[in-house]
Image 1 (cartoon, rainbow, N blue to C red):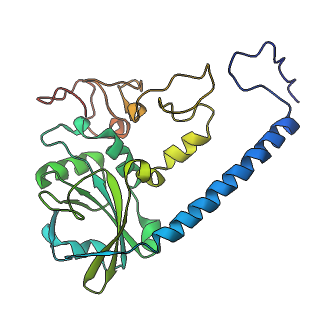
Image 2 (image 1 turned 90 degrees about the vertical axis):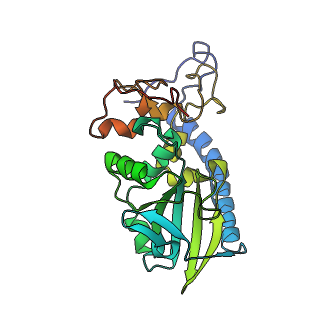
Length: 260
């Protein structure tokens, strides 16, 4: 059964019109041309990344993991390539007080089997003290490798909140690429799917039709209360934490008193 297109004079202001399938397909095909151009430009950017100059670093510099200090070279696990996510950390904060943006990135990267199949290892680096990091990863149920890079300089330590790629040639290690700002989005499949939906991500910067739900600050929807309502405050926490043991809404943020 085919629905009758709505009378445009009665459509809600600012909302896209309701049309028949043929009209929709024509508009969709027009947008597809732009999408394909975007894809091809992405391919060209990826090719340019492969041609960036490299920076050699000391592969013997030690990071701290579950077995104590190990050389950065060990993170390759014998493979030639390594991708790391540099997870922000707030010293002394309870689990729910850690970065909601980094939490969602790490959650989407729980399993690296497909990267491993292509000869790429994956690890999470953070500046937290290892005892705090170990407790947090156990609470979250993470199985991918985590390491503390506390007090280390770039490119192993330093600024957090982005992805970096490294290449190994025997015992030599090279930084090949790193992201900035929204460059971590390829690691988060939810962003790509939300971008396809009618309401999008629901962030304030988005260009949406008038009458659509109003947007809010980035990552606001990654933190909810026990009922699933996006909110900030002492009863909220990063969304995946509600599936973890001991994730109760009565816990507070202790001495920090606010979310970051």
